[in-house]
Length: 489
Image (cartoon, rainbow, N blue to C red; front, side):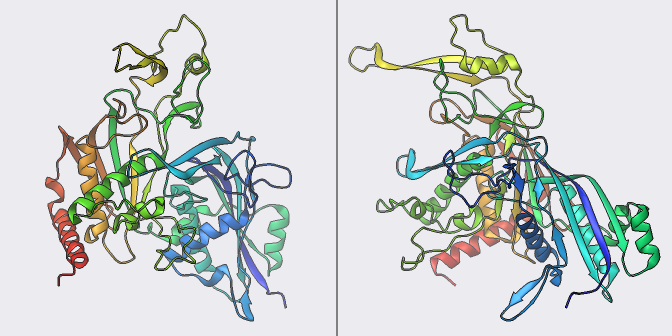
């Protein structure tokens, strides 16, 4: 028997990608390992099931609510929240982003860990429609509170969507939001709907939701600038230049880009060295599988891990783990001009460097003659004098646990100390003069308190005078973790 609906609450707007976005297709692509989902008209879109799943996961973390439906044996209940498919506006062009694993033995590319995925670039827009049904006799006020929370979370980009959400993908912002309420069990309500007289009630929902819920994630913003050439290398080579910097659409044009996965990988590799040094562990030579090389205590918890392909059959195989740390993709502040983009494939003798790009030629030296080695002349386009956005990190602790009381945050802080000291390079060519950077300050937003602290970085050292109490708690959590791993009481 159909349920009787007294009210419906409708939230509409436009979802704008604030980061690259990947919502995958069930099909295996011919052009990409991980293709994007397309609808029956061959348009890129966000399936309603994907949107509803992300909203449901966030809602359960924020406040357990049964309105999303359930199925248990021969019992079940349909969801009272209906989310439409969200087709992309303006037919955005998909980009192909490449990923690779780094072998911890030799620092080169790990075997069979190279892949690519299609993504929709930053600035892509999607129509959004969410309908909340209120059954007769149910609490309308509770439904308004829920819709107010959802609207606020979407507007602030708090809910991640799609794949790779801890590696720089999947941040959507709700813009041009409008809210409508319709009452279906009265004559006046039906006539108001027919006459189109329902007013925008988004302000009422926000008021009903009350004060914003305490932020659940610790946020760290790192203000930095490169000391010299710094870039993530594009997967393709140019026609006249061998190495090109990676660029992506950022809403205003093509800009130099450091993928979140690249930044996170550099931080993870250094965190592994810290833990192995503290514990006196060497990387076992027998660890030939890339997943085995990454199985480092605490690092795996902080940065996450994929489920091994043979986990179902391997004895004692570790399951996958969702990362506590998320790293946003970072863009240069200024889009490249058309003339600069034309330089990428320029095959001209009259090359002239632009403001942000310079061509550099390199050659290997023959150890016998001391001259140029045969067939080892190569060139690169190097970014110069570029200004970059801050690197943004999010750290989530277990429910009810303050972040500074966890060993995982202590490990992250040790890694950030070395990052600010210039011991971690980013991007391509880190062993050949690329990737050096200078950090000027950290901005930390502590969850639960609304407190924000700015920590200057002077000559590579973080001014920690304002967080001595929190540092003491991190140190204690770190020591307790070490004692546990060493088997001491």
